[in-house]
Amino acid sequence: MATASATAAGKPKSAPAGMTKEEKKVIFASSLGTVFEWYDFYLYGSLAAIIAKQFFSGLDPTSAYIFALLAFAAGFLVRPFGAIFFGRLGDMIGRKYTFLVTILIMGSSTFIVGLLPSYASIGMTAPVVLIALRMLQGLALGGEYGGAATYVAEHAPHGKRGAYTSWIQTTATLGLFLSVIVIVGVSNVLGPKEFGDWGWRIPFLVSIILLGVSVWIRLSLNESPAFQKMKSEGRTSKAPLTESFAQWKNLKIVILALLGLTAGQAVVWYCGQFYALFFLTTIAKVDATTANLLIAGSLLIGTPFFVIFGTLSDKIGRKPIIMAGCLIAALTYFSVFPMLLKYANPALLQAQQTTKVTITANPSECSFQGSPIARDIDFRTSCDIAKRALTQSYIPYDNKPGAEGAPATVSVGDKVFTAPAATLNAQGHGFSAESAKAIGDFRKGVTDAAKAANLTIAADTGKMNIGMLLVVLVFLVILVTMVYGPIAAMLVELFPTRIRYTSMSLPYHIGNGWFGGLLPTTAFAMVAATGDIYFGLWYPVIVAAGTFVIGMLFIRETKDVDIYARD
Image (cartoon, rainbow, N blue to C red; front, top):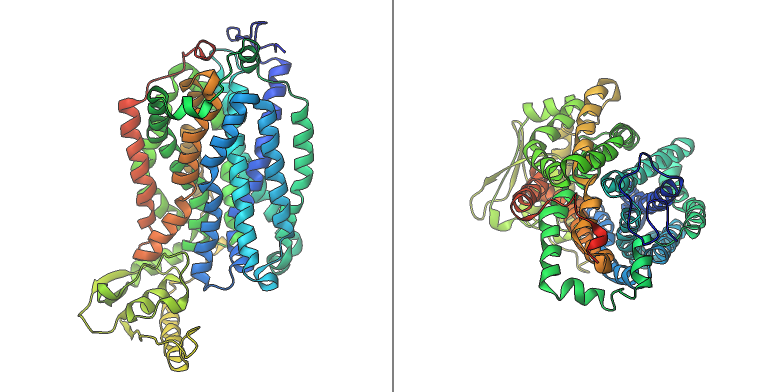
């Protein structure tokens, strides 16, 4: 089939005056299905705190939360494998049918999460099945994005690929926005207790309706003209994996696309949306409903900039916009996130500035507090128990070396508490009664002192500067739109048609699945390990800065590439 954006030979016309009906249908159908898949994917991230209680209740609260984030990250870890598997299918049998399969896998996995019994009901089977479903979601998403981006780009007129594919780029943010709105709506109707007990399942279950609509629309689509032309001429790749990754001329581009584009784009994306949400709810102690509404508001305001920057990239190029977004992020994050705390919870900020908390301990006795699989009983030294008491309440602290053999102490202002060491009970499944009492008394003393100093005070919505919070959050979203809006077009233009689906999918999903998807878990663990609430920002700052340097030196501009001439 030759659409209005292609001649009978399958090559696009010069950019027409306006978007045709067929082109609008292609963009709408591809975008709607992708919105739905991102909605499914982000439900889990938005409900991480509840997921931790439902499926990882066998761990202490801090470890449970970190493990829940790690399970969230598991979906990202497998995305490159989905990219390889479905990318190969897409280059061999076609774009349309491949991303029809991915949406069915994604939607079914999400629906089953809504039915899955909790840890209290079936024990360890619950988190195991949950992680397996997350991995299925990740595999499906690994094949979805490359198909949608390639499909739309191959329908777009030359000179408008940035504008057309930017609509696909809005889908991740719109999916997050939709998940936030559904969660807030259901939570407000049921109330916090009922929502936490069972109501959290509703957003997962209603996704079956969205799945039906998305599949119905995608079934009405035709294959892309570029793939049809290539198939009719017998030039489809018989071994897209070999061509993409075993031939240096293509593998080199894959590596550069990862390090010089998608790695930095990914950390800016996840820092500006997901880590901002985690920061508000844990560090700034904003209630979940308010934090989600603030994120939703910033997304609503900032989302049009995906299309703005995508369209602008057709005129001035993809590279300068993406590189500028990475550079600005690296230069501003350490200024922007303290502003979030200042405007969200000024009383907490004042308390942190007024009352210093210090742990004095022998460094050789201190373990890594950010371990995702550790339990309370794994932390038995005096230093570990001291740090655990502060980490579980997200209280920032300074570290001071102590004398060898001396017990760790926690200073909260002028009050000093000596942390005990712990011994296990006879069964080895918990602390001895004596240790449990000593630890309990120590934690109570530290917690009471911290509470008296307002170091655990919850954010007061009446004292929030909502306007400035939105300004800061919108700024973060605009950085997201700068790096993400033009990148689909650029990735499509980097690779030839016969291996495009496979080649572009892998660097995109390694970047977004590994560099970006691991950001919340990694940054959260870095904060837990050091006591510095801003230490986790070093991760996105270093990656974004590295991408800027590599991209500026080695990535070429692609906006004028004729993608039909490179098959």
